[in-house]
Length: 266
Image 1 (cartoon, one colour):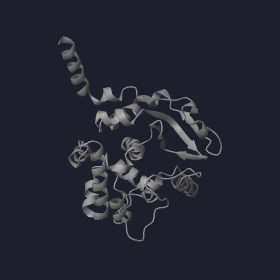
Image 2: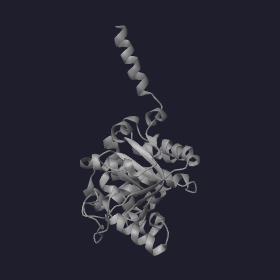
Image 3: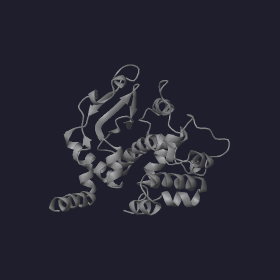
Image 4: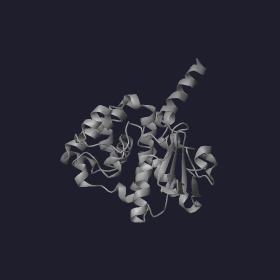
């Protein structure tokens, strides 16, 4: 009886552990590309990273832990094996803000002290939504999602998950085009666009594929208190938010509309 009570006590204590405990050990700071898949380190991908300086690590890790606290611990434990933080990230000679490794369920993010905290947090939610979409695609209602687009609209990439088996993904191509056009890092693709919102999209990046559309919508659903104002003004966007919340709540019922209202009101 004593042993049984001890087991029950340990279970109950684990159930109420703060989210910081759930996220403990998830964040690390690689010094080389050795943690990446081998084929990513070879041509034509030629992955490159720059290690994150020690002085920036505490701040970056704090932002990630805050992002993790917005999910139930069980969702993190089941679906995320690590977050690797670097100073810069490059594939195909193109600068990236982040990516994920679907098989190992590891997210890689580039951090710079000049970044806006919310913007950096959004990068995490962006990538983690892809991890969840890969795992629970059968729970995602792509028909309802597509119904929120205008009849003549077509994504640059077909399917729900963007296919990159034949080389560069459409997202990579668009990012490269934007960096070449502007001479910048391509962040202009993520600028909120009121005209596009009327058509159901937050940014130009949303128009690449359903996956990227979900990514950026999720980034704002978890962080932007103005998302509800955008939804009130734009019915097509509001429909996508409904589909996305239904997707998250199918993974864990606590990820409800009330939950997202609360975390964006913090």
